[in-house]
Length: 89
Image (cartoon, rainbow, N blue to C red):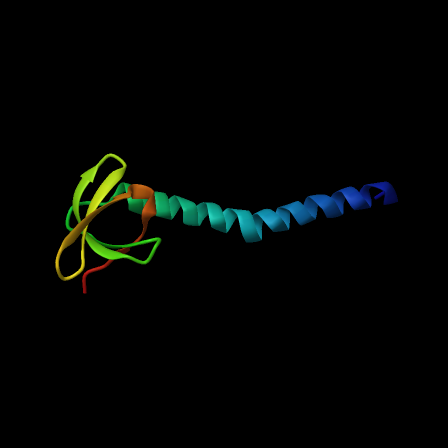
């Protein structure tokens, strides 16, 4: 193998490692989050990206109405703001 191709091969290997170790896992995580947000339904307990715990009362396209706190305050958030669904034990 000629010496002139060695830097090119190293560059290709670096990009392959970057893809396998960083980009691919991030794409997989983004896909899981997108699926979770698409499968939200009324009654789910969720945590927002701001740390607010609440129960979904209403879903309308990209707007979700949450019931939060002991006095049952209702707030509206964007669907994108849901970080996690809390599984019922």
